[in-house]
Image 1 (cartoon, rainbow, N blue to C red):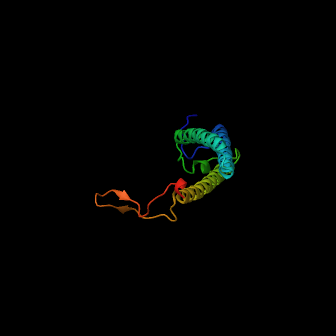
Image 2 (cartoon, helix red, strand yellow):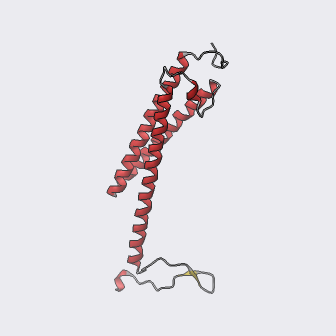
Image 3 (tube, one colour):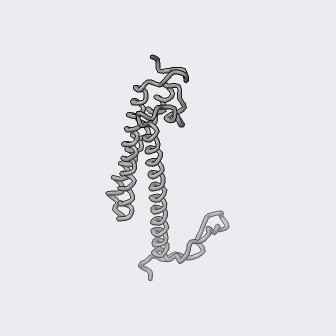
Length: 165
């Protein structure tokens, strides 16, 4: 039987199993992404630069792997004549395709939430670092830029080096 079938013909169990296997790979890939995001979170919380660098590299690799699996799944569904979005709903429940797809969606949501949370943590640490640098430079608050007669930006305050105090 060819890969392209009419909707009136029953789907082969083999097709369901192939998609289930792809979804199992996608679940494993998303679990790897989630683990790398958790490692990134731990490194950020500990302010461990070496661990953060490793976690960021692991995250990039796991995202690339998950994306490759997603591309394979989309190609498979297209070959089956199905939409890449929601094509899993058109397969039988016997192979557990729908349950696996729901697991992929749940893992994707968890990854998105953790990635957003890590981004908030990074932004908070950046604000604290910038605040500490302003204090070390003698600035008390962030200022709007001021421009001199030649159009060159200058600060309203004279900055003194830390040694001049």
